[in-house]
Image: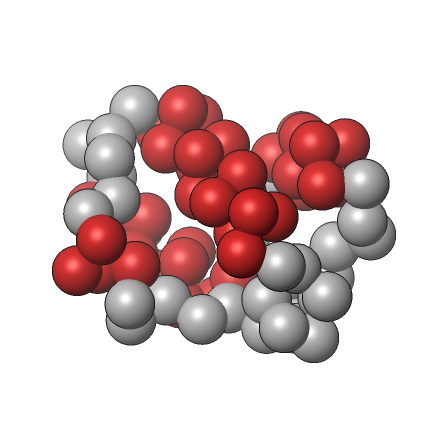
Length: 72
């Protein structure tokens, strides 16, 4: 799963405790929190996640799978 460093960045920016084993909704992330999370991931891994792909991502597990599949 994502590193502790990424988790800390997401928690810092969203002001919420994150559990990577739960969905975005179960982590009480609103749409702005999700955008912030995606932005952090994009910056960390150096690529953009297109809106079409975002529609398929509803939790950290699917986000992690997407990143691993598209990592350079």
